Length: 123
Image 1 (cartoon, rainbow, N blue to C red):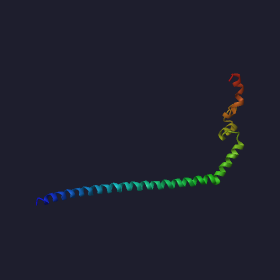
Image 2 (cartoon, helix red, strand yellow):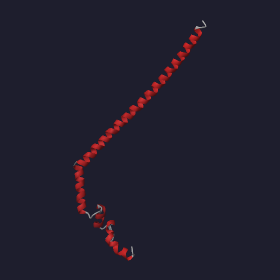
Image 3 (cartoon, helix red, strand yellow):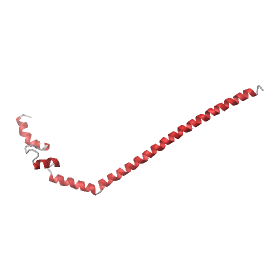
């Protein structure tokens, strides 16, 4: 009987180790399930972002290749012909309406007008 006791003790030790391994396996399975849930959530977000990027890309292509772009480009060309170089529409309208004093100049107009003053000051 003394021979059975060490064998039984060894068997009990092995059973405890197996039980501990099973508990660790269950814990690992729970962690793995949580990781998989997180990955699925990330995948859903990535798919949504890809869809948004695709919509933005389509909108951009429509804008740059469609009628809207041609209309904007034509409006810009008309504005360039009507307005003096570099002036804004707001500045031109205000000057024309008299909202801006006649003595005020658009910032790009100061070169030749200020030359005499600069020469007089030696600058």
